[in-house]
Amino acid sequence: MRAETMTILTHIYLLATVAAREIRIRETPHKILDNKALPGATFQYSGRIESGYLNGSEEGNLQLFYMFFESESKAENVPLLLWLNGGPGCSSLFGAFVEIGPFLVNKDGKTLYQNAYSFGRVADLLFLETPIGTGFSYDTKNLSGIVVGDDETAKMNSMALQHFFNDRPYLRNRDFFIAGESYAGVYISTLAREIVKHNLDADENSRINLKGIMVGNGMVDAKILYNSMIPFMNYHGFIDGEIWEDIKEECCDGNDVDECDFSQYGTYLKEFYIPSYSTQCGKALLRAIMPPEGLMPYDINQQCYKDSSVQRKCFPNDGNDHNTAWELSYESTDPQLGLPCWYEEALKKYFNRDDVQQRIHIKDEWRRQQKEWTPNSLLVSEAYEGTYHETAPIYKDIIDNLNGAEFRVLIYNGDMDLVCNARGADKFGKILAKKLELVRGPRNPWYFRGNLAGYQKSYTNGKVTVDVLTVKGAGHFAPMNRPGPCLQMYKNFFAGSHNYTLTDDFNANPIISEDIPQQ
Image (cartoon, rainbow, N blue to C red; front, side):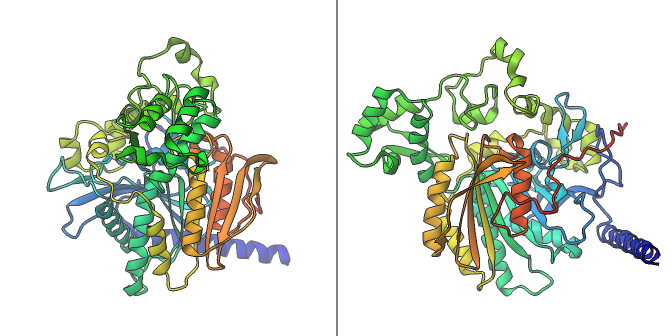
């Protein structure tokens, strides 16, 4: 009898699940990839995929490209995660197809393989190419136009989100989180502020159920990150001992070098401080911080980020010529078969395919005018004028407008990133906690499959929590370098756990689908 009852209940559950999914599909009749896999997919994805454009302006001219992946989990109330990449001008399709999405691009740029550690196992995933001029996003009134400011980007992203939820009311009450990395540290905090201010006067039909934000290797405070980068370089052996003594003498006035303000001897330019040659300190810093050829500042363990457009912009002296020995051996430096070395060209090849652009609903207007999709828009990067060099005041605005609601913040950093470094993030967490009047907890190691995955500590007042984590061995793109630990980290953050070692019912082992080649 019990077995029959369980069978009946199982059938009822399955029917209800199918019905719910059919209702959701009817609510979003456009954009769906009609249950067909993406071109080149080597496996059948179990969730629904949507793609298309969201309106980012009242006039309707700002068209932001998005992709949405329904979670592989069949649970009805999984959280919804919006992922943003930074730059400015870096496409969030990098996050989708190199880091956390269900599909990873192959080296050939023709096929996609399964991401065994996709965050889609624990959340619905929304990726947004922002600001205008990034990726497939464009302005219908000015096809070569771009958006180049933090506040403008935040308002545009907020409106696009309202468009997304209005078309999908079944998602509006889901726990909603915003995450990303690098300059998205600014995008995320400013968007969160827009949302909580909108929610103050919004009714239930237009509120967004924002529960928290996650910033990975983020631009949280330019001065703190720069001042932390100099000691970081020295402690990792990149600065000559005599130059280091000059730096301490010329820059720190006898103060503790870890608290030295190197930024006062430089000029802020495009998210970075550039040392001034007009001062003795600036001269010493210039001798110290120029990376030698072959050093990838965003991941000091990597040996192959050659010809990267972002690196050429930020570190013009690191060299762009190809080293034949590295070309032959680069795939031995990471566990992803050299993915960090070739993803950029593979992504470009894949998303510039005509069949791919048609399948993901790229508008003909964009296709007629734009010559090429690129993962990093130098046009946006060079024109963008950031307003917020520090984000702690933005976080204060967010918390002040929550009316006492609970809110969670995760600041995590791969500890091999020189630029958006873990030491700077740790200092930022301390400053933020003081501003928000939070109490610090102990710093403890956290583990993945029994191995050390990094360190964690929490600040809280019972309502607001700020967790600061390191991801051991990861660079700027932590989910790419350490996919398993990062999936576990996000799973615990979604659950509100402050113990990032917990696995509970979560299977940390990879789940590989049977390959089903798609024509």
